[in-house]
Amino acid sequence: MNERQLEYFRRKLWTWKDEILEDSRETIEGLQDSTRNIPDVADRASEETDRALELRTRDRQRKLVAKIDAALRRIDEGEYGYCEVTGEPISLKRLDARPIATMSLEAQERHERREKVHRDD
Image (cartoon, rainbow, N blue to C red):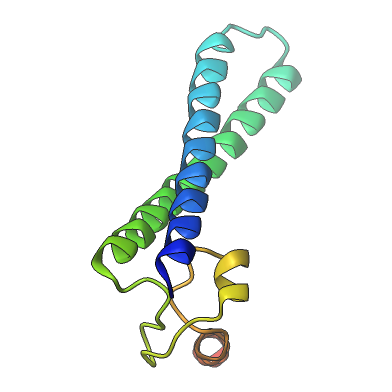
C-alpha cells in the first residue's frame, strides 16, 4: 500500500473516531439532562429501557474506538492492510468498507465458519 492510500485510511479512521466521540459526548449530555423523576411507571420504564439501549450502544462504540486505535497503530507500525492470519494483503475494497479489518475476506469467512461450528456444539 502506498503512502497516499495509507493517508486516506488514516484520515478515514480519525474521522470515524471523532464522530463516535462526538456522539458519546452528546449521549452523556442527554443522559445528564434526562435524569428527572418521572411519576408514571410506564413512562419511567420506557425511559429506563431507552437509557439502557443507549448505554449498550455506547459500550459497543467504545470497543469500536479501541479497534480504530489499533488500526491507527498498525498504520504507524507499517502493518496495516495485511491479514493477521495469512500475512497476505487485505483488499483495498474490503478496507474501504471496513477500515478496522484485520483479516482478509477469505480468512474472515473461515474464522466465522469455525466459530459457527464450535458454537453449535
